Length: 159
Image 1 (cartoon, rainbow, N blue to C red):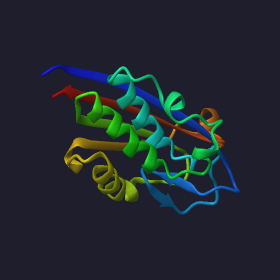
Image 2: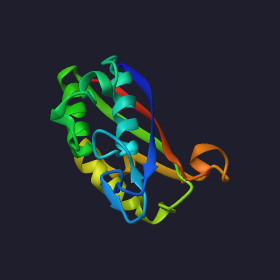
Image 3: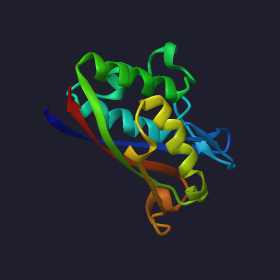
Image 4: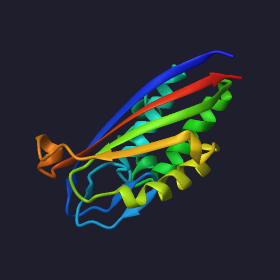
């Protein structure tokens, strides 16, 4: 087996007119991510980490924000298509490690639900998905509650 690693990063501006989706879960909050899709920055960073590890370019290449096909799309669909691309290239997911950077709201109580939802879409065990959340101590655009940033590292294996 050949092991590969990928890193993903996504950032979105927050606005009062949008819903906040993270890890496939709708988080109650007065602000949500501005995006062409549903703005799920966590899923977008996971897609990029997996695509990068498999040398399949990035999320924007496969699901461009200029296409009406992806307007307001549920990011779980993008993740499912990403998993399909990995499988077609002969890769299986080893594990995924994520960090959500968000000043408010606190999302720790939703992490188990996110892991459950993502495990189903990724077709892996919840034990293979680590999600952590942090603030930026009120520094930068995240600290000012202007945006959200997510980072993901993924390991895949050639099968």
